[in-house]
Image 1 (cartoon, rainbow, N blue to C red):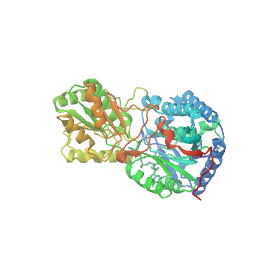
Image 2: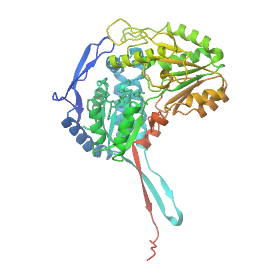
Image 3: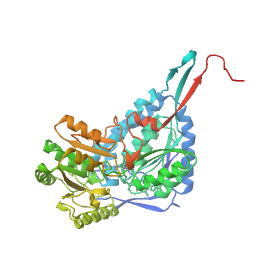
Image 4: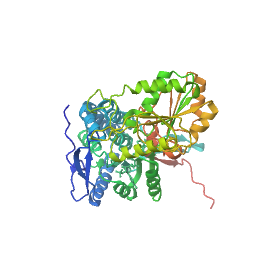
Length: 486
Ligand code: NAP
C-alpha cells in the first residue's frame, strides 16, 4: 500500500501551509507501531493571530457570495475528497490507527457527505415573511455568526473537521480549526482541499497545539462561536470560557450510553449491534453503547454468541484491508483502558474475554467483555473510551429504563426488540439525543447528532446544524403612521 503525501507543514493559514518552528515540537505517532510519522510545531500566538485575522477577512468576502456560490465550493470539495478517498483513508489510518477497512468507508466519506449535504442546503438558507395586523409585516434574515472556532477530538479527525466546517461555511462563516494534538494531520488535508475547491484564502484555517491553543482561540474577541468535540471536563471549561463573552457554542461530548436487549430481540442483530457499539474504532467512539443491558433470560446465550463472534475479529496491520480491529490511539489511552480493566476485575466483574495488551510495538489491546457488571461499578459509570463492553442483567422494562437513565450522560441509546410498540415506548423514555432501534451507531448526515444532559449542547448534521451556525435578524415593517402617546 502506498502512503499519500503527508501535509507539508504544521498549520494552514490564509490558503497556504505555514511553519513556525518557534512553537513547541509535537510528535505524531503511528499507533500500530509507535513510530514517529511526523513532527509538527504547536501554534505560537503569532500563528493564532494570523489565522483569526485571515478568517475575519475571508468571512466578509465569503458571506457576500450567494448561497449557491458558497454551496458550489463545498460540493466541489466533497467531490475532491471522494476522488481521493483512498489516500485520505490511509492518512486517517496512519493518524489514528483505525483499520483501513473502517477509514475507507467512514471517515473521508462521511466528511464528503457533510460537505455535499450542506453545500446543497447553502442556496436555500432564507428568512421568512410574517404578515401582521393592519397591513404591517415583518421579515427575518438568516445571518452568519462570523468567525467560528472548531476544536476536535482525536478519534475522527477528518470527519470532525468536515462536520464542523460544512455547516459553518454553508451559513457564511469562516473557521479556525484546532485538531487534537494526538491526530493533527487529517484536518490539514481538508483545508488544502477546500482551497483547491475555490474557498477564499483564510476561510478554513488549521492551527495545531494542545488545549492552551484551543483556550486562546475560545477567548479571543474575534471569535463568535466555539464548537467542541471532546470530553465532558473539557466541555465544561470551554463552555464556561465562551459564556464569559456570550459566544455561541456547540458541545459534542462524551457518553456512557445504554444498549438494551430484550428477550425477544433478534439475537444475531443484537450481538452485531453490541459489537458495532463497543468495538468499532477499537471502542474510541463517543456514542458507544458501553452499558449493554441484556434480559436475564437470554444473557448466557448472548454472551456465548458474542464470544463466538469476537473470535472473528482480525487484529493486525491496520493498512491491510482484512484487518477489522486496530490499536488504541496512544500509549496514554491504552493505559487508561488497562486501568479501567483492572478496576473492573477489582470490583468483582467477570472478565469473559479480552483485555490483554498484545506483546508487540504500538498500542494494542484485545476487545474486552465484562459480565456480571452492576450499576455502581466504576466501569459501568465512567466513560472508558476503549474496547471494554459491560454486560448488565435486567428483568423488566421499567427497571431497565430507570437504570439506563441513571447517569449524568445522555448522548446515545439503543434498543433491540421485535416488539415495535415496546421499542418506540422505551426509546421515548430513554434520556439520550441520538437513539437507535434495532441498530447501533449509524450517523448519516441527514440526522441530527448530539447529546442531552452532560453529553452536550446543540446538534451537528442535518438542518438542525444550520440553527447553530447562523442567527436570525427580525425586521418589523410598519405600513401605517406611527402612533406615539405624546
Ligand atoms: P478532550 O481531551 O476533551 O479534547 C478535545 C479537544 O479540546 C482537543 O483538541 C483538546 O486539545 C482541546 N482542549 C483541551 N482543553 C482545552 C481548553 N481548555 N480549551 C480549549 N480546547 C481545549 O477530548 P479527546 O480526549 O481528544 O477525545 C475524547 C473525548 O471526546 C471523549 O470523551 C469522547 O466521548 C468525546 N467525543 C465526543 C464526540 C461527540 O460527537 N459527542 C465525538 C468524538 C469524541 P488537546 O487534546 O490537543 O490538548
